[in-house]
Amino acid sequence: MDKEEILQRCNAICRNTLMDTLDIDFIDVGEDFLTARMPVTPRVHQPDGVLHGGASVALAESVGSAASYMFLDTDNFAIRGLEISANHTRSKKDGHVFATARFLHKGRTTQLWEIKITDEEDRLISICKLTTIALKK
Image 1 (tube, helix red, strand yellow):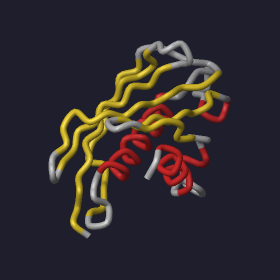
Image 2 (tube, rainbow, N blue to C red):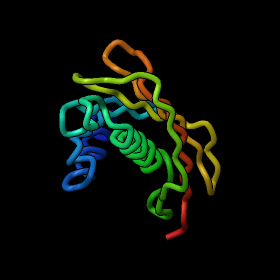
Image 3 (spheres, rainbow, N blue to C red):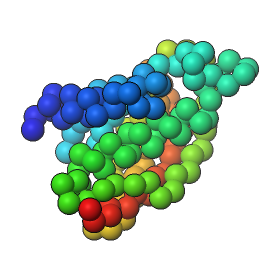
Image 4 (cartoon, rainbow, N blue to C red):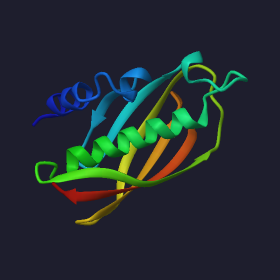
């Protein structure tokens, strides 16, 4: 598949899911990464008007899981998240955030992803680590 087909596929499988609720849109893909964008609006704010850490983690797990789906053999394996951790380094009130997932480890059973969430000026908002597992169907 070409880049546009991959992005269309990622966005299509997210309809009527949490990713749809959070307006997460997959916007770029390469040989070793997948990037998604999420708007920062009151829908994803915590009570004091900044991006909720849980929304950032949902974005990170969404892009990491979608990357697993794109880069692994999902015809024979189901991908599940095992663990996610996040460090939030900067707050964000509006605009968009961008999450890019890259493999740190691509094992046959477990995979380790680094997901960097940045703003429009490429400043780090959060950095996350996601461990996924490939389970035989």
